Length: 165
Image (cartoon, rainbow, N blue to C red; front, side, top):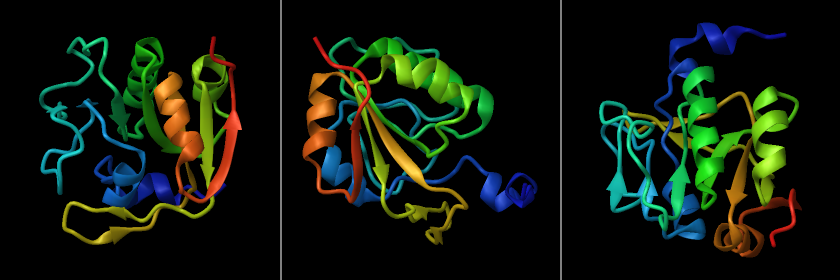
């Protein structure tokens, strides 16, 4: 296994910003609990950065959530579990369905997911484009977010995970 990603500070950083075209295609959103410290644009009217700790806040029950969580193991799982319990939102995640996060949290709770055809070109804090070593997927919880994901124009494969009642 190539471990350069874990040893490379630039690649291992949690500061990878969602490209605006993804938000434009899937939004609008009410809450971004994982907003960057210096966001290049606003994703949602209500947002929490690392210092404000989106996990510590109660999320409004009607909020449609967008989440590009920190990919560090501990906060990634905590944020994803909170979104799964919230039940109304989307998360941009690393495309690694064999890990426990997918097996224990996402597959049992999410409505659907989109395996993105191309690797996302994330924005970096210095304005450069970052190219990660992995593919991405978008996971949706709730009827509205499932519909948005199903009808979006993002290239990839849409997959139903759980039938909504």
